Image (cartoon, rainbow, N blue to C red; front, side, top):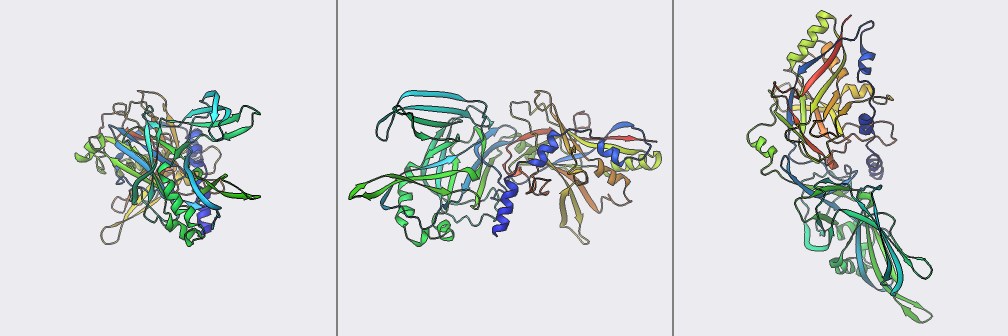
Length: 534
């Protein structure tokens, strides 16, 4: 179990190596075709072929347990295409040391929860109070505050009220599979609330007399005082000194089950933070006797909120009055025969995109290959954002996963057996120094639509040049699946961890794309093939 947990977190703690490489490295997409092309052939024509592009609804749910959350998401965002998306976060906590000794007559002074969002490190404002008085001892001091804006997705000028509640359901093990729509009971009494305006800061307080540091924070963070939680921590922590509840991890996570962090508002923005970097600090005083003199020094106790704890992303959706809801109500999504007019893709359990190359188009390529000796140099699926509905200030997606789905019918009747795997293009080129599975164009231009080319050279060549029956529609329903989010790297950072290891569960991006149903739209999803003949 321990080895499994360590391996899981080793994977998730890495950057999205695969997808960054796939996005940033931009070699000639024909390089694969050149490797596979017939000797002596010359580069030929680029031709467009029809595809069937359709929406895949994921029931607004995704695995969001500790094995999936490389980052956590908090906040809420409401817009007219996808509706409202709200993210809360649930975590266990453990003692940093078991059977702790808090000293004689210990009393809780305060408890602070610290969250460290991602932020713009190169954008800061510094303010200084030369006449500050440090409250512990009324010491004349100087207070310097450095303020940074956090990284937001959504409406940037919004104020949130962040609540912290005690979880009352046992959260299980960190390796347990949990979906993002799972419900965990919590105590309605709010332990602490923080008014948050979208910036975080560091604070340094120095004594005027000798310039020594009285107080300092090194990492910008949101600090939430749990003012209503002092009694809870007194009763559940301090007063349990020497009791079985604090003796080991197994007892403790059933005694103090966890914390829930959420925002009160239903619109604003979504922001990310590292689950393993959170802090929970309890400040307390106790009796200390020296030479017959009793003093009450202040002490701190830090809880462990990082790896090894259960972490859950709780995501809620309200699609009411959104364009996506209208499309669903009108049965305008999920058409795997004719395709959909618009495609909706959203991270964190929102919809995905499926793309199928019709048998008729494969047959055209087969005929070219067999009759004209035309071999494929490159093939790519091109998809555009929809300028009519997605012309806004939101960042366009730049990270995707691109997988191959094979749905094979059983020998008798449905249900079907569906497999998910890397495309043969990824398997062929992964590890090459300059490989690219997709390219991004016009990402930062509005209203110009962005477009994305997903490389399928090897995949299409396999279909065209394979044996008869490899792509028979009565045997295999083969299609590609596009999700918002990136592939994660393996534990030694030498390649991709696997088809199921992605950042989908915490990627905030979304976009509306042009589908394939409107044959008159030149921005519809298409297969672009470059082939040559001898």
